[in-house]
Image (tube, rainbow, N blue to C red; front, side, top):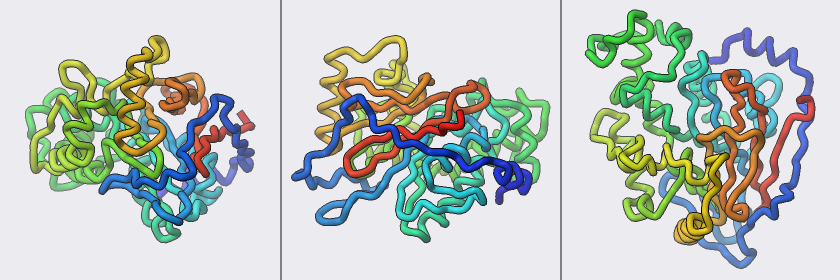
Length: 333
């Protein structure tokens, strides 16, 4: 559960002043006569006469609890007491909760406790794996902070003798590594997080989705990653984890690179992917932007604003409602 110190901290927060800034980018929307089912077996979708639910999407957090809570408050889904007030809103967090910050356990714990609250109200919390979740489970510890390890000290029954953990002198860091090792208790938690989520008229992914991923199968990518994290299979590194061309769903920067914009051909490829998925936009994280923005005529939304203290960026989220995308910001900033 949430540390009481965090609750006291948020009691001291002044009420956030939210503003829905309707994009001036000419946001794409699904046609009124298009009722195609854009969901996957792992996601929520609404068809027929059922009105679409409100979606709030949150980018990379990197183990910063206060910023995660602030993003959820800006999205209007938790109150000052940190309880769910979002009704049937769907929250999608696009990955990279791990690394760079020191509150990994705290952020994961909060989301995992928020999920049943949302479901009881008819809402949903969809967490996704980013490249840093996959890196941690894949024995890539380049970006972790040793201060984050203490939170895992209470874990018992874990085998920390794995040679992959020999680089750590801190026993708590070995516990953290064992917790996220495929089959470990925290690996089993993130095994339930998706790599690609199709929710109503939007596909969410940490890096990007290309034709090769559709050919492999979105459900297959999610299932394969889930099995690997559960310790029951192997990871196809070309689809998830990097691969030789880093066009995996969690590493791709085709649509998020803030220095090299996608080409016209790449935007055409994106349009084809969206059409095949039956959606109108892709939402990605992975690469820090100064503010939420779009490329490819609003087909790709880039929502990683570097909100964590490590980067010092702004906290912004997007709201998708009635076919429109709104950027929600805190005017207090």
